[in-house]
View 1 (cartoon, rainbow, N blue to C red):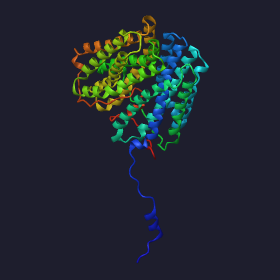
View 2 (view 1 turned 180 degrees about the horizontal axis):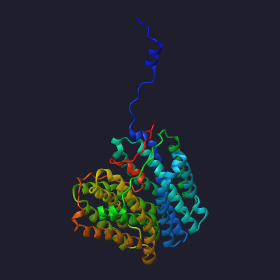
View 3 (view 1 turned 135 degrees about the vertical axis):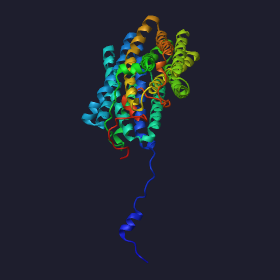
View 4 (view 1 turned 45 degrees about the vertical axis):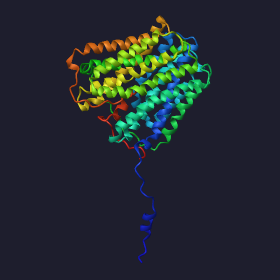
Length: 436
């Protein structure tokens, strides 16, 4: 009998090869961090609006504060890369999350419109930086064959996180310090999976660019769709809780109203997207914006009191309005070469952000003139004009499909970095995959 050598026994008794880990499992820490961030941000936005209303701040003041968040987010999306390049992803994330957590509990300590405006501005900038770090990591960790799935999961988490944040409004009175502390806790917990994850350091993500003039020439309707949805949905997110409070909802009702309406996006985004793959996307944009405008007008026409009809109309409005953004991007994609997809989508993110910065302020002026229901009069007018513009554009054959349709993909309305998860991405620098 031949005796085995020590080296042979070491190989035989050594660690056995492990099965390949699913990309979703490897990225679970990042998804947990995203969930914590979205819950904290969702609760913060609703809580600040409701508390500002109870403190007697005017509609225009609240609108300015809500617009400040989107201004800060746009600035943060642009400058975050410089911070990350200077100190690295983990340190940048830790610093920004700590600032967001501190800001979340600063509101009840400094109850003044100017202070809250600055808090929202800084919070938006820091939160954008956090999103850039997360999306950079997802980009570096997702295999090419998994990009579409990662993008879909990421979008679902964004919506589910927001929906899950709203019931937290019922944990304590909005007049107390408790809910601000809860917000801070969630934002702080987002630090844990990021600082402990074994994900590799992401590569530098480049943002391709297309001129605004050329983008408008490619598709005026796609351009207008991104801008109008930004104006309408930011107004709803910023002033929706104020509207709910003014029509008689208690804290539980406000949370339920916001959660039910956002659930509409989960229910209707994919069906509308698939429909746009089968017929001219312009018809879907026109119909969705028109019906969403009618649903918003129905809310404005309802009596100022909580009701199931108001909830249902809100569900329809949000469910139809949110998909317009992704369908607008898909419509533009039908008219460009494959290499331009991410560059065009990056520009549409900026266009959406510009509309989002204006939305809450314009809605607040409408509420000051027309009362609480002025919010939905403004939203209805915005989406109605988009639908009318789409009908006018139907007369221009130049906006038809120039290339075979690529198929609908749900695009997040966060930063250009998430677009690198798109299957047609370019500009991703080298990085080490998660678990490396």
